[in-house]
Image 1: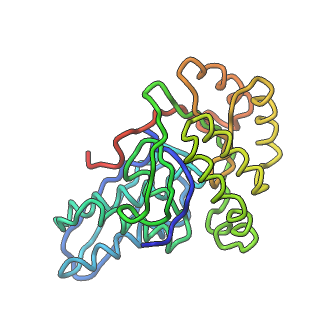
Image 2: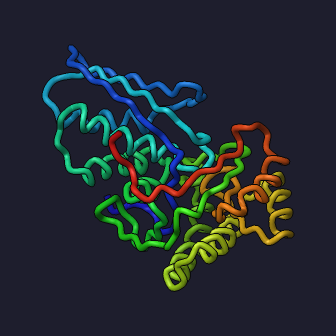
Length: 277
């Protein structure tokens, strides 16, 4: 539970909504569906279900359906969102009466175990714009806020996936992350604004050396007109946080390079955090 990441991020209104049903069975069985999405592995969701089933007597047949509204594997937190929403929903369905933070900790642990993320769950638990000043699961890691308003929106252009597990397993990548990440977090704590978040996020992305050729073309164009953009961690995705009056300007660039209509999303900042619907 002490493992995690220092960094910063924000929660979006578009994410993952999860439906769960469970019934008694002669043996445990888990079915996980992601309609409309080509998801090769559901290891994180399976880990969450198996963990929660250790808290009940007997066996269950569990049916899970993730309604995913964001590109999968592209650095926008779909794995963490699915993990957290599943933990909260299954906790309710099984009537475990587990405290909210305990269920969130199980979701965080599943992400760590499967190497799909380090900080998404704690951000999604509390919502808004957060600086993760100390690593760890929700209730253990420490966060500080970055002030944002309902006028702010996130605009994202996704080209494709970067396997998070491969990056997190790479000694070279971890070294580059550790070289600069901590210093940037401390600088952001001293100046906790959206402008500084975008500026420092871009510095971090450039330091990691993961910006692809097609991402570079977009960044060069947005740089020329003074639009602050960066790279989502970890995915071949460019994003910016702008006021609503800037949406059309940034969309005019993103849509020009987008491989499909689904590649571009505009979403509000979510200030509530994950919850039952």
